[in-house]
Each structure stands twice: as C-alpha cells, then as structure tokens.
Image (tube, rainbow, N blue to C red):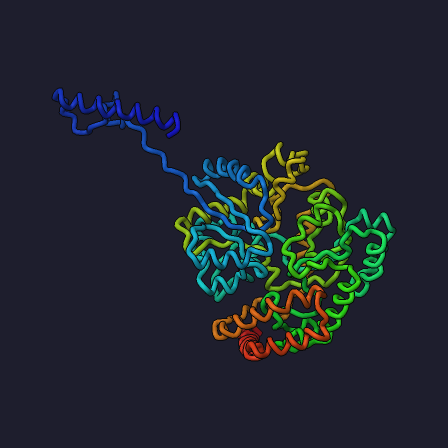
Length: 502
C-alpha cells in the first residue's frame, strides 16, 4: 500500500471510531458518519473511494522495443487522467504475429485490443471465427470521434457481413509498391534508378553492389516477399486471384500464370547470383539489416513523403521509385486495424481508449514516438526530431492508429496530410474491392492449402528453389489439397456479389 493510501485509511479509521463514540454517548442522529451543515443539511464526512483505473491489454505487431514498458507507463499516466484506463502493450515480431495470435486467442488469453489486418492475423477470417467483437454500437457511442475522423470508405470498406469488427488506421487507402534504395550506395556508385520498375530492370544495380560491396545484401527480403504481378489476391499470400487488367472476373490459380513463372525464374537467377540472402526464405524481419545500412534495395508499400519517414527512422537517406500502379484493394483498406477482443472484459473502455488514440494528438504521438525530450523533441507545434534514445523505441507508425495526427518529421512539407488526401483520391479500385470471400464451406481445404503454402511458398517466392522443378510440384500439391474446389466456391460467391453490387 502506498503512503497516500495508508494515510487515507488511517483518517478513515479515526472518523469511523469517532462516529461510534458519538453514537454510544446517545447521539440520536440517524445518519451515521454525517454532520449538520450550517444550513441544516446532511453532508458526508467521508471521501468517496475513487474508482481503480481499468488496465487494458494491447497486443500489436512489430519488433519488440526495449522501452515499450517505459513509454506505456507515461501513456498510462495520461490515459488514467483522461479516461480512467492504464495500458499494457505486448509486441510480437512481424513474422511470428499471426501464428502466435492464433494460439493466444484460441486459448482465451486475456486481451482487450489487438492488431489485425489483411496480411497479419487475417481480419476477415478472424472476424468470422468470432475472435473480435462487433463494434457497431460502440462506434456510435464511445467511438464517435473515430467516425468523424475517418474517410467513410475505411469503415464501409472494412465491414464483414455487414458489421464493423475493427478500426482502420487513418492512412493511405491505395497500395502503391515501390523499390526502396539505400541512397548512400546509390550515390557512391552513381546508380541510375529512374528507369527501374520491373523486376528484371534491377539486375545491373544488383550486379554492381554484389561485385563492389561484398558485405552488403543487394536485394533484401523476408519470407513474406511476393513479386509484383497484375493480380488481385482473394486471400493474402494464397494463390487464388483475379486479373487486374482482363476485366473477366475469373478466379484463377496465380501459380499457373506466365507472369508468375517468369517472376520466379528471375528470382531464382538472382538467388543463384548471390543477390538475395541465403536465409531469405526463413527470415522474419529485416529490422537488423535495415538499421545496419548493409542493403541496396528492398520493396515496400509507400505513402506520400515516405522517403523522409524511412530516412528519419534508419538514420541515413532512403529514396524510392514506383514498382506498381496505385490500386485500392480490400487488403489496403484493411492494411492496419485495431480490433477489440471478443473476450475483452472492458469493451467500452477499450473503445474509449481507441477513440482517444485516434483523436488526441498528444496520446497518438506518445504511443508512436515515445516520451518527449527522451525519445524525441518537438521543434515546432507539429514538428519533431528523433533523439538518440529513439533507437530504443522505434515503432511502426502505420500500425498504431490515425497517422494524420502524428508530428511532421524534418523535411516533411507543411501540406503533408493534404497530399495524403490527394494520394488516396488517385487510387484505382481493384475488381474485387468490397468483396470478402466467405471460406466457411472450404475450411478443410484451406487448412490443407495452408500446409502446402508453408512447404513451398516462401522458397519459391524468394528464388531459393528452382521453379522449373518446384513450381509444378507446388501446383500439383495445391490441387491435391483442394484448390480447385476453393476456386470454384470463390467464383460462385464473386459472381453472386457482382449481381448484387452491379
């Protein structure tokens, strides 16, 4: 017990004892523990006990940071005063998140808020499994600020069977893939990146770095790498897809397309040449190699002025050039979300916290950048610079809520968030935008397909194995696992959705 609580308990004991003595002496007042005010009304002589704050348990994605508990202690001081909650955050590393969260939610591990998305701990599938609470009423009551802050397309586009189960981060709507380059190496060797877009066009740059910088990874990637192809995947990193260009709305096995075969052959050539790390197919995070600066290029989804953000985070200049068109997919609308666990004991408080996180700049920047004058310093009202301690608290901004509340970084223009709105407006809708495949009739087949994916996918996509040998094996095994049945079911649902939605 703290000193303050001990003092309160001591005073309370004296008051109770005094009341009992007065009663024993014949005091006939009816209200024990009360005294007459000068006006004759009864006033309580005891102080009402303050409610204990609710602790919210938050699971989110990202490389675990050294100072996360230190920052959450400061966050909790702020949220305790604002809404009567404290926050305990647990981070799970990128490559482990989906699997570990499946185990934790299935076992009933206590949690209130959890990160979900189209690509990690699948939002649609887990909403249908009952992992998340439907939040329609909570949004109307405790989440009004979120509704006002978000582009309506986010909440409308992230409904599952007519209900909202998660809060999308207010960020970019479309997906625009870029090749990112370590500018230090680009400048050192005079590399021309202006004409780079296709996978094959990377080869001269990769060759130069392989020959001249033996300690550098020319092409950095992890096990989730997927070549840029003109297809819209119905489930992230599984082979059911619809062409972005044909207009035929046919669900196909993307592994059987000529575009995929060519991309995998190119990747295998790069792997054999030593442009790709030998451990790429088992690598879960690029955090270490990116912080070290020992890489030439990788691929990422971009946002307006993302080069500034990446350069600030890594401590050296990063530049990028487009690798794809700007397309609004289901997975980009659902690319970063916070859900409330179906097992949460405090759903209203969880929504209050998420509402504050998405509307209060002080809280949003504390969660994102850490403690002011420890991890960062403000240079203007809405600008900041990282301090040396930021290396102990380097969070993935996109995964934490409304990014349009975050302070501007050095080099960011004053109109950054206006540019975000223009960027969102320029995205082209994917053919299946708004269609969510209901997998309930093919769960057995999908489980088998997932096993085949675990066996072949990462090795093929990273070029680790020869596609001339392993691609036919993978295609046959996916078919044996029931892929054709899944494609037929998806096609039936897509056709019906098109009739309904014209």
